[in-house]
Image (cartoon, rainbow, N blue to C red; front, side, top):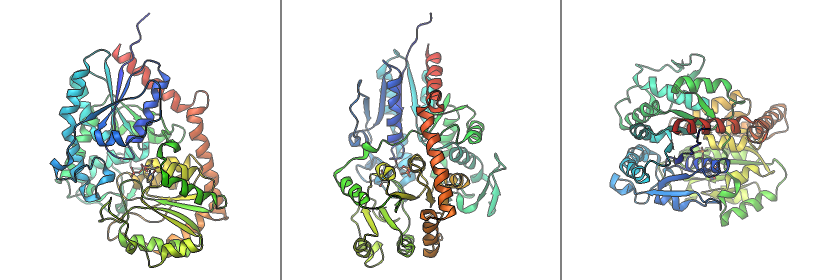
Length: 470
Ligand code: UDP
């Protein structure tokens, strides 16, 4: 019999809140292979911010030195959540400085057991590192199949395109018709020479050298999208989703009062609002959204990050909201503004939560639909526009607005109407909830049912890796 060799799995997420926790959950694969070593590699700041559940064997951690100030970033900015949107590209470039330390770490490990590197697509260069060492390499995409396939394809073609019409089919996937407003600005023609485009070009070219791809989606929900992703990346992706936030991971003292507030309200009566961990709407949009919420007459819980252009970690300024907004909401028990971070996974799992106004970051989409909570979409960047399109096609999302540029005007009447539709006791609302509940069941089955697709994919991936290092 051949000896079975388990590789030492190195997990290397990008420095962002939508990425690190997803990789951390992937580290749970240790439970499936007794004796499998897993090391999570990141920066010291990111690793020390993690609240790791006790586990046996404990997850190994390795900190790489990273000095954001050397790159003109605020000292201590070790995550996209710590900086402003206009600094993202500098941060992406700065992240490439981790390469020598990452290589040094691998060298220190020696060759027994062999390593398998599972990295973020934004750390595409790790595929190059793996190839030079003859180590297997996988990209783990915390996003979904459709969103990533379209994102990769758009990057491939759009920056070279001479013009982009208002509506146009994608070159690789002519069945997918996009609108100009669904394309992040940095992907549009004539921006091809900027550093952001150059960074993504490098990252994607490296990603195309990877051996295999793990993707945070459910086979039953995205069968043809997985095929699109295979064509984009040239390898068969393993759908191992949903890789979901564990509600307990986001516990802090302020959380308890938010949950108590939810406890006090009837089932499905609260609209939860959040634009994720790193982006925001602009100041005009924020005021209009607030007015739209008041006009809707529905109860809301708003995790409010500073508007675009304000210090992401700065103090809360009441000027961001219409005069008296918070007081009126509190008096009528009509709403709660959470200044900063909300325990999102717990909020979405709470029976009082009836819908989620989201930027359609993929973690948010999964966390909501896994609880049968329908969506109002307001995509802001990256592949969020494509995620919003997908969930609208699934019949579980109404898109209320798009983007956070100055030109992206929002109308309070439109917000109010959409909120009433999705939260209401009407045919559309009922239908959306029914479809969301069916998606929630498919997500649960992917991990829990015998022969579930996620569990099967993860097993297939591990077997492939073991065969390649034998
Ligand atoms: N999140 C949270 N509280 C907040 C904002 C975000 O817990 O107030 C979590 C959310 O549950 C999700 C992640 O941060 O797991 C955001 O990931 P997503 O992919 O939705 O968006 P991103 O932040 O990457 O744009």
